[in-house]
Image 1: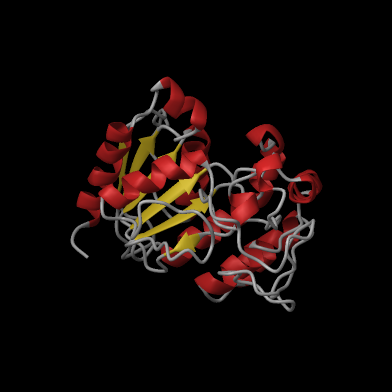
Image 2 (image 1 turned 60 degrees about the vertical axis):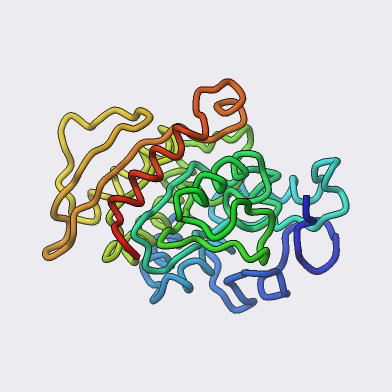
Amino acid sequence: MTAAPGPGTADGPVPPGTGWPEDPATAATPVAHDAAQVGALAAGAATVAELAARQSVCRACPRLVEWREHVAAVKRRSSRGERYWGRPVPGWGDERPAVLIVGLAPAAHGGNRTGRVFTGDRSGDVLFASLYRCGLAAQPASLAAGDGQRLIRARMVAAVRCAPPANKPTVTERDTCAPWLSAEYARVAGSVTVVVCLGAFAWQSMWPVLRSAGFALPRPRPAFGHGAQVRLGGGEPGGRGVLLIGCYHPSQQNTFTGRVTPAMLDDVFQRAAREAGPA
């Protein structure tokens, strides 16, 4: 495994603007310290890049800040020689994506270590291999920020931007983080035709986002399942429709037990790529 990039192997989070590859923020990027500030800073970001920068320095959820920074200081034994990112992990990929891929949250020793969601962990190994086979990623693996990986007509985000203890954010943490997701969707909605939700948490997190984007949501709300799909039309006046597809999360537990297989992932992402149409 390639060591995570960054200046040295010091403990604790990487200060913004200090040279970490793909760091979207600088020392001047404004920081949200509570839910109200998250909403204001998300709404006020003029571009996708500015929004990513603001996401990457957020400190609105005390429990998540404490946990992600603790992990970045203590580290995993196999990664003791590496510097950990230790900050919120922003959305990344194409700024005009046809496919939006939504996960739960960064892994403590994956995205929280590398600074890029689904990068540097076994879930990402399975996910990116499928994205590559389906023409949505430039390389079959994603090891570290700055490794040359690139999403093709796709963008990847997490419903909660910080690694949570036991991989379980609270409802309050989800709701505090929600404006980042809503704002990101609003800024890419003009090109998005497919949203792939990796797991039930992502599926549930997208409904308020789609409602705020102007979509009329079906009642009762469709249940999550692997391969489940819902086609929504309308959105904002003049907006395009979107296909929502459910996909089992490629967690280690799901892949080791066979609940989700490479073929199952390929089926979802091939469907998404077909729906997105030619580049």
